[in-house]
Image 1 (spheres, rainbow, N blue to C red):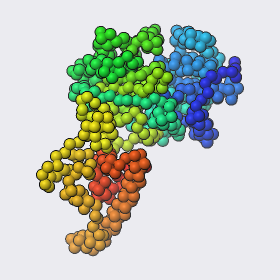
Image 2: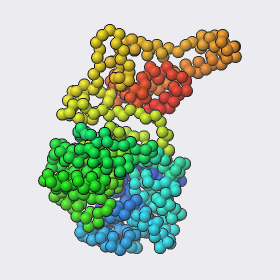
Image 3: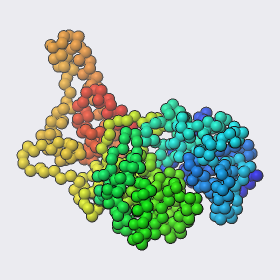
Image 4: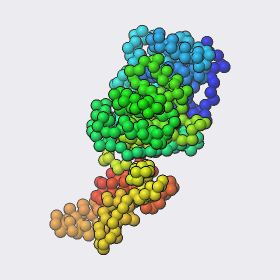
Length: 556
């Protein structure tokens, strides 16, 4: 059944290193492993290679189940396996199997579907609905692999699906192991994973040519004026997004700005809902730009025709509603249009990731943001400290992205800068006329250069903590000797904590210096991230200094 000639593509060095680390973790006794690898760096090829390795190494005895989180992705995973010339079974309705087999023959001139193969591809919903029919097979599975593993919690349908494999180790893969509800994906939290293996970052992928560079345009839009806030731990509702779309000018804006920033480029557009997406599609076509809309309601044949038309560049704009933000690979994307807002960092990065695969005729990806996603989440290649822990909700921090106020530019840039790096427009204008004018930090994002000398002197004075002996005498006079002794002890602890915090801030500042920031920009960044100046941070009560210390430690 298994031919050693199978396996077409040689993995990249970092993919081989990730495989080796995953195997090492399994050998160390970790049962379920999370692989975190940015969109476009080859998650699917990596786990398909692992599935092939396990099948060959076990002489066809190690049965593997590859789970996908929705039925649309069964064909994609099957075709990736076929591209690697890996025979596999497909657990799906017969019409779906026949359609995939036809696609395999069309693309690869051979059929890789084999119901006797040790690797099977199945959607979570199909497995949950038909598990009784496949109970014997499920118990024989020794390895399960699931894509978009951020969905997988102990008690949801994805978690229930892997429980059907009591004798298996597991591998979950995702580009963004973070949930909007802040639940943790680790076994110790709300999920099932014992450890996480992290691949290179998006920024690393761009630097080394595995992902393409990008440019961002944030044209003026009135959409956010009509958008109702999402609830805590929730994304924007379809109703709220659609209502904002109809009250705003976004339908015309997306066409106008596609022509302005990305004319004739292959674009994918994320729309807020089917009704709005339908109007946008008509607007594009009426303007002479061939556009096609695909949604969860589109038939298999409609999706296939739409994808083929886009691949052939007959269609210029491919609109979708919650269809391509996860998992689905769409080739040839030169432009990503955000017409759908999201509170989810994962969804934001997944949407941009659809277009970050490099190609010979693409110098860079163009991202057009009409709905404020860049301001909410920052740059697509910003470093993120991924974790399997629950995310502890902290005070909301000010975003480090500023949109240039020049209407001819509208480019996003780092808020620590004092002027737009693209057109030179000043970021903050503060009147310095008149003696003794007070300019508080919050008016200038903590930019010490723009704060008046009197305020600076007051801020500096606040960091000079009172001598413990003086504190003790003062407290003893009011509350007695015992209280004075306690006050001395507490003040000594506060001074010691201040020294520790100052050392940690110095380490953090050194890291920012290494990244190329000036002293002025470092002070601005600290203020923006912590909503306070460095001097204020060093003047607070001990408990609050300890809190700041823990927050900064995570960035060193």
